[in-house]
Length: 307
Image 1: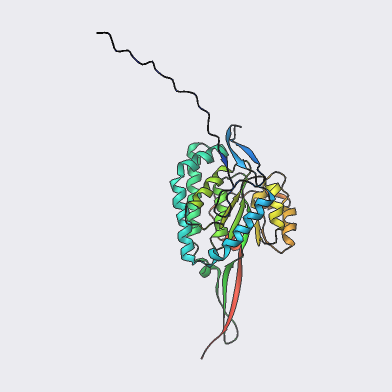
Image 2: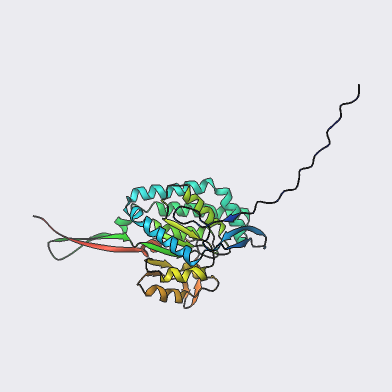
C-alpha cells in the first residue's frame, strides 16, 4: 500500500491592518466631520495609532445644538436618576478597562502598571462625581436667615450648555475631571479633546453611547482646539466655558477666548497658572466641588411665613 500523501503546509497569506478612523460624538450619534477631514494620531514614539476626525466650525455648531436640545430633559431629571445614569457610565468604563489601559499607555507613554493606576483613578473619579448628584442642593444651597416673616431659600441650578477644552496631557483622568463636574448638576457639555491624545476620549464617548446617558448630554469633538475653541467661546447659545485645556494647546491664547466669552457674559473657568502662562492642574489630587460650583447658578426664592 502506498503511503497517504500529506498536504503541504499552507502559510497564512499576509493581511493588511484595519486602520481605524474614529468619528465625532454628537447628539448620541457618531457622524463624520462635515468637512470630511481627518488626521493621524500617533503614540509618544511616533507610531501610527488611528485616524481621528478633524472637527470644524459647523461640527461645533451642531454639537451646541445637540447639547441645547438635551438640556431640558437632563436638567429636569431627578438628581437620583442622574446619579444612577452616571454610575452606569462607570460600569461601562470598568468593562473596557483593558482597552483604556492600552490607549492611555500609548497616548501618554506610560508603563502598563502606571496606565492601570491612571485608568482606575479616572473611573473612581467618575463615581465620586456621580455620587454628588443628590447632595449638591443640601451642600451648596440653604435656608437663609432674614429679618422678616419670610422664608428665604437658595438652591443651585445648572447654567445650561457648557463648552470645555479637555486637558492636553492627561488623556483620561483629566478628561473625566473636566466633563463629570459639568454634567453632574444637569448641565450639558461640548468637549474638545486633546488633539494629540484623543483616543481615550473616543472610547469614553463609546461608553457614554452604550450607557443610559441621553444623546446630546455629552458631545465629543476631536481636532484642533485653536480652530474650534474661538467659535465655542463666541457662540451665543453656550452659557459657560472651561478653559482648563488651553494649557499646552497649540495656537490657543486663553485670554482671547475669555474676551470672546465676555461678549455674551458667559461663565468662564480659567486655566491654572498666573498671567498668560496656563498650567495644567495635577489631576491626581483629591477633587472638591469647585469645578461643579463654577457651572451653577443660585436661585433665591422668598416665601411668606403663614400663621
